Length: 319
Image 1 (cartoon, rainbow, N blue to C red):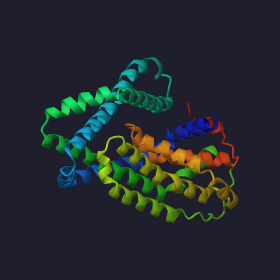
Image 2 (image 1 turned 90 degrees about the horizontal axis):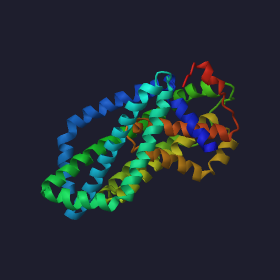
Image 3 (image 1 turned 135 degrees about the vertical axis):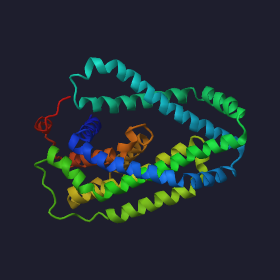
């Protein structure tokens, strides 16, 4: 129940307009910037990824192409299911709902994402044989390779977009979290001086390790299933220690930091959950912020600082 409370409070804070505005002001311009960068470097990057794929055995390219196509079908299935259910429910319930719509959107996308993922995994043999052994064999090797290269282009640009979003949040973490602090914990006593947690070094170290491992493990991205696990691990590595140390630096006492850093399983669990959200359509743009909010509320809860639920009324929340 405690974990559920942290999740729910983090979700509620994410959809507050004062917080959502900061997320959109950060995320949308960066998205446009990376769309522009992608437009400029698309052809050279496509030549590079196509050249890399030419070294990979056809059987591996075919299997990876099947996985990538299934991933796209999964995303389309999630969005179509969400749109269909929303079209039915919206006229009945949304007239009386304001920001409750965001609760609905977030949880519904998660449910459909998990549901369709489970369905595809339980029918993996059928999907793989249909796509890999039939659909892809109808195409010449060059077409399969180019298709995989295009998807790989999207993956590279998307990864840099999320990485940039993470780094921008790292630079503006204090004003972002202070917005939440003023609403949920107005009576919390904050350190007069930040404690030393080594967060700047950790952020730089983890970012460089993330980039280095992404390059070193790049060939493994062509191995189905393993490529998904690698991405989950890399994003979890990036999220785990940086968010915890940087948040504790501002809002923890020295003894709190020394005590909480022993909860490695919890910190890694939060990071892995956040890395999974990177794959969910629409939600992925909010993932770095949501991961930060979860670790923030977890730290406050571990410090026995109680949030004021009346803050919802003070903000005029309805739904």
